Image (cartoon, rainbow, N blue to C red):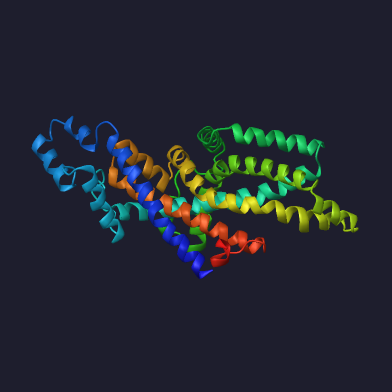
Length: 326
């Protein structure tokens, strides 16, 4: 296990270097930069803009700027945001907690509902419940997240049952610890529904298909031939084998949710990492973009690592460490 972790951590290094370099290159190739908008302001002289460019390292060639940023990043310094004039780590630290809470909440809701619903529609194939849930699944997959966010905000505005935007209430700091928890949960309900809807619908359909395929497998026929109860066959043999690809898929879910959270956070006025990265891209704030890309990539790679470990515990046929390469 220790050797497996070490090997995977070492493999992350070239991946992160490649991802960050390509991101740096793409942002640099975009027409204009943050200072182009400042040049339109007559109150800011060209000399002041040029001085700002030099202070942020914009006068150097792209490879030199990337290597300088990479050397700082290795030391834990992601540079300064040209738009906010503060440390990138400070900005990300203020936002990443909200995004992680939202993404993990959506991930938990997605899996807690998608797995049992997928099993239910597979067992009752062809029944009315299968058709209704399958129809709702197709609807959930086809409905864009931002459009569903608009619909739920409209619902919140009409009913007053939920807060219209924001991660916490304006008097959050004055609340007791239990009241703070309830307030944050209250604000999480609608964005969690938005992020969980499409993922839950697709996972439910995938689980249904996996169970239907496995029910025709030879080892399932053998289990039934031994006289095992149908419930035992379903949960001990079919479901356990059906979960293996979904455990691997879970490693990608966190990164996907972080990307999908950007539009949802913008629409619902949530102060998260996704909306921060969207603002950074629109402003061509290259160091803030790079910091957000680095954090998102780390979370995705760590999610894949944890998924591999969980898959090894779920399926004893899978071995980690040195034996995996034999």
